[in-house]
Structure formats: structure tokens, C-alpha cells
Length: 292
Image (cartoon, rainbow, N blue to C red; front, side):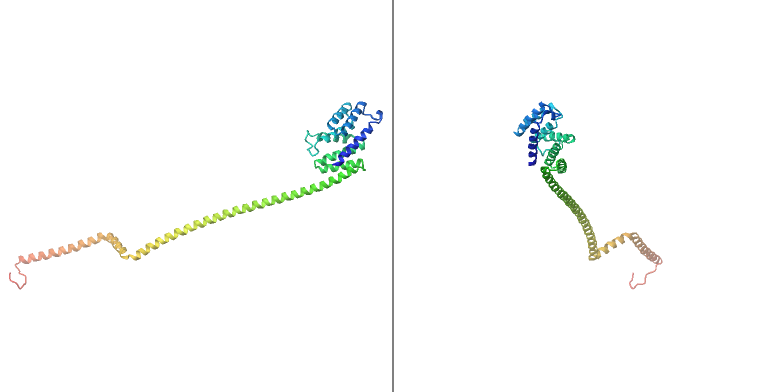
């Protein structure tokens, strides 16, 4: 921001000239205050900013409401601080300077000095890349002094930076949205792949179970077929077994028939014996061709 240093030097020169005005023209100043401000201005020109800060503080001790001493102290702090630091960084002299300038902006009646206050506030905001705020301060500076070409140039630069910042933000948002969409699509694809794998595993397991059932059924059918073939190849053994089963099943009936037959034979034998004995008792001889 080259315009910042130009503004400060211009103000310092103007303040030096103002110090030559008779004391009666300085309602809020006294001789001690003026001497400290002159000493501070001289040190400021020599870039001895820390020493200039001491002199401006002495001027404020002599006159706490001195707007010139306050403004010069703020510009000295700007030279010693980090213009890109956060405004919440209390250890940064720029944060102190900004607070002083904001207070002055609310109370200064001198439009020439107010122009420079808003210009410096615009530079501070610009250094933080707070281009919205910088633009407003530069506009306020131009309202106080429409001929301030430095404020006009910085306003245009801040507007360009703001446009570039918005474009970068849009690009980042679009990229983030695209990345989020890509991540979402990837997650969905992964979920689908996981689900497909689960379905495939289930199908494989079902197929294995079905194959096992089919194999078991084939084994059972084969066993039945083998048994039928064995029965066909050895029918006698089957009949003998059946006969044995039947004999075992009718053994009592068969035994009764045998006993009955034997009893009949025994009765017939007894009848013949009895008939023979009766014949012998009657002295009858059997009809035969042989002599006794």
C-alpha cells in the first residue's frame, strides 16, 4: 500500500506547519503538548518510530483529548505493527492503532483529518483482506475529500480484490460441493458394492446348500437302487429267507399235521395187529401156498 506512507508524510508536514500557528488558535493544546508533537514528528521523519511513540504519548499526557497527538500516535503504531495480523491480536500495535482511529472517526469535526482517519482504517482492513470494510472506509475518505486520488485508487483496488475473493470463494464452494458429491457417490458405490457382495455370498451359500441337498438325495436314491439290484440278482436267497420266515411262522400247524398223520398210522398198525391176533386165536390159517 504505497499510498499509506504518502498520507502519513503529508500529515506530518501539515502538523509541523500547524505548530507555527499562534497558541491562541489551538484551543485544546498548550506549549508542552506542541513541543512533544514537534519532537515526535521529527523522530517519525527519521523513522525512529518507537521514540516518536514516546513523544506522542507525552503529548497526550499533557492534553488527553488531543486529536492530533492521537492520530500521530496511531500512525506511528501502524509503522511498528503487522498490518496482516488479526484485529483481536492485542499484542499487535496495529490493533491499538485501529482502536484509536475508530474512536477518532466518531468525534472528529475536521473533515481533512477525518479523511485521513478513514483512509488509514481502509488500509488496515485491506491488509487483513477484509475488502468489504476497506471499501466502506475508502468511500468515507472520498466523501470527506473527493479530490483524494490515493483513496480513489485504493478503492478501485479493494473492489477488484473483493471480486477476486468472491470468485475464489465461489470456486472453493463449487469444489467443496463437487468433492462432497464425489464422496457421496463413492460412498453410495461402496455401499452398493458391499450389498452386491452380501447378496452374492448369500446366493453362493444357498447354492451350496442346494447342491448338498441334491447330493444327499442322489446318494439315497443310489442306495435304494443298489438294494433293488441286489434283490434281483439273488432271488433264491430271498425266497429261502421268505420260506424260512414262513416255516417259522406255521411251524405249530405243521407239527400238528405231522402228529395227526403219525396217530392215524399208529391206529392203523394197532388195528392190523389186533385183527391178526384175533385170527390166530380162532385157529385160522392164512391162505398161503406154503406149509406151516
